[in-house]
Amino acid sequence: MNIRKRNGESEEYNPLKIKHALDKAFKACSYSVSEDVLDSIINDIEIWEDIEVEDIQNQIVEIVVTIK
Image (cartoon, rainbow, N blue to C red):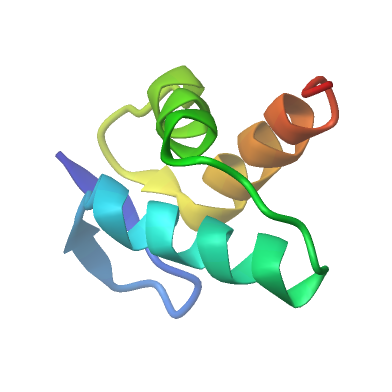
């Protein structure tokens, strides 16, 4: 399945790339999250063919704000 990047290019969906970015973002904010939490976020993202990165980002924001 492909995603559409900000520059318009298409790239194969790679959940590990998103997981790595999430981990870096949490660490930059001095938050420690477990692998299970990161995996849960990734698993909750709805992916469809040619989804735009912004759509993935919006979903992640919605998911993260519900984490307690």
